[in-house]
Structures are given as C-alpha cells and as structure tokens.
Image (cartoon, rainbow over all chains, first blue to last red; front, side, top):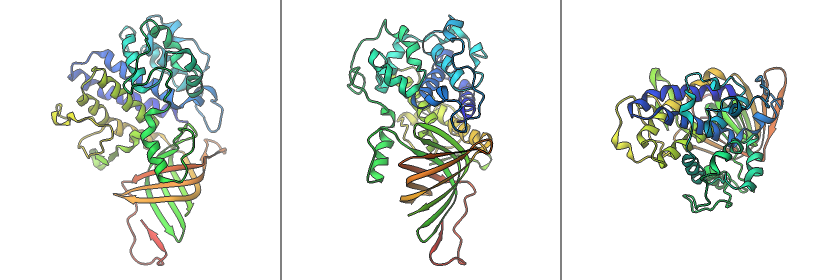
Length: 240
Length: 157
C-alpha cells in the first residue's frame, strides 16, 4: 500500500550503514547483496498484489507499466539476483528504482550462484525444481526466482539444507513459523494456512468500560490477508 | 523493548517482525551464515551502534529484545518513515478474544476484525479476517492512568 515508504526505509538504511560496511572492510558488493536480498525477500513474501493489482483498494501510487522493459535485457551487465530483484523492484515498488545506476555500480552486483544456493537452502524455499514455480508465482507474483533460475541451474544440486530438507520438501513461510506458533497459542483456532495476520503499532490510549474497549493506535503496520497496510492512526472498538 | 534514540525519540525493535523487517533480518542471517559479514555488522544495520565493534555482542540473536543504546538504524528509519510518511487513518472493530498488558506492551487478539482503511480520496477499503493479533508498544506520549473521576467500571490504561 505504501511502496514508497518501503523504498524510503530500504534506501535510508542502506545509505546509513554504508560507512559501517566500509569500517568493517566489506566489499561494496556485500552491501549491494544485502540490499538485493532484502528487496527480493520483501517482494517474495507478500507483495503479489503490488505487482498485479495496482488498482485494487486504496492503492494510490502511480504504477509504472508492469510489463516494462526487462532490466536483464536492458542492462546485460546486471546479472543474477541483483538484476532480477531490482527489475521486480522497479515495477513492484512503483517508484523510480535506481536501476539506472544511481550510486550502484552495475558490475559490482553480479552474484555468484553459490550465494544463491545458500540463500535457497537457508530459507527452506526450493527455487530449483520447476514444480515450485506455481507456488512462488502464487505467492510472489512476478517472482524474481524465474529470472534467477538460468543463473542457478548450472550449480544447483538437490542437497539437504540447514533444516535437513531436500528440495521438494516445501516449507512455506518458514520464516514466520515462530510468530505463527505464538499466535496459535493465543486463540482456540489457528487456521489451516500459514498466514499470520498481525498488527505492529504503538498505543496512545487503551480504555475499557465494562466489556467495551476503545483504543487509539498509532504508527502501525497491518499485515492482513497477505498484504500490508500502514496507518498513522487507528481507532479500535472491541467487545470482549 | 525500546531502544533509545536522540532527542528523546525512542525506537522500538518489535517492528522487525513486520514484512520489511523480517525480510531484512532474514537477509542478514543469510549473510552471516555464509560468512559474508560478521554478526556485529548485522547488529549495526539493525541498531547502528555508534561506537567501535562491540565484541560482547557475539551472541547474535534476532529475537534479542534487549535495550541497546544509540541509534538503531532500521528501527529508526522505519519509525521515522512511518511517522513522517504515513497519513492514513484506519478504524478497526471486532470481538476481543484475548487482551494482555505486560511491560507496557498490549497484546490483543481480535476475532472477526473489520478494518476500515481510508483511502486517499473518499473511498474506504474494508478488510476483514477471521482473527488478527495486535501488538502495541506504548507511544512516547501515551496517556497515563487517570485517577478518580471515572466510574468503577472504567479503566484507563
């Protein structure tokens, strides 16, 4: 809903920690790698609607043509994860992404396939086998994985990952399992799917009269039905 | 829970559980696992500790909610972006299944929540779900408990 906010946050963080990466003697591409991972994960985990249904609901950001020029084709020197993810980012964030090279040297972004394998294995996702395409596409819209595959296939081998899972043993949303468990403890039913609907916010006021609760929340991020909504203020009225 | 910032502004770490926060912490985790970056550097991304590397922070945990001084970069960027960049007002109604107040953190589990998300124009989007969990930390200027005046049945928190 607020792609430009996410864009702002990512850019702000990356720019701010650049000096830290230099202090630690990191190559510039490590930071670029972090940014690419961050963005691709963000797109991967929740924002299918960003790319696919810009007109849905209250989305107001001017959405560039989703079928815009493929950055991989436009810039052959940008390869691998970074090329794929920034391409998706340009469309899905709805903002001018610095794929034209604002501050990012294109040649420094090429990502070894090894790193990709590590990433796949760690998250428990299987980006290697073709049959996962549907799942990824369903969850992530124009999935970066599709673009990445050609670069991975040469080195990708089915090996158990850190969790001992072979490719094909799908663990969707493994990243969220912890909070999911926590959520289920709280209520009588947990829902069958792995979807976690949650709000992160701060409260200004929480008031109760008998079984009526009134709350004033601020600065919140709602994750509901697989989408994110942000709010400056949210009044809550609940019956217990 | 909170990390202090400059100018009395405080930044909460719990936003790291959000989509954008999870994407970042997972990415950092991977880079650490691959040996690309030291854990201390990851902590500085999240927390932007202003001094030299701190060896005692070796035990890296993304669920670590300790109070750590100085500016938390991600927490700071996110909080400030939310405060400055978001104007939307929202309402939510529903049945409160669980409520809990612990260490100034409210947790609500609401059944059949109905969110009314105000759009930019006159349009409002209704969003519903079977249930939702609301985790709310105390705002910097949250209203304190009022003494007297209210009926016995009323609680201000």
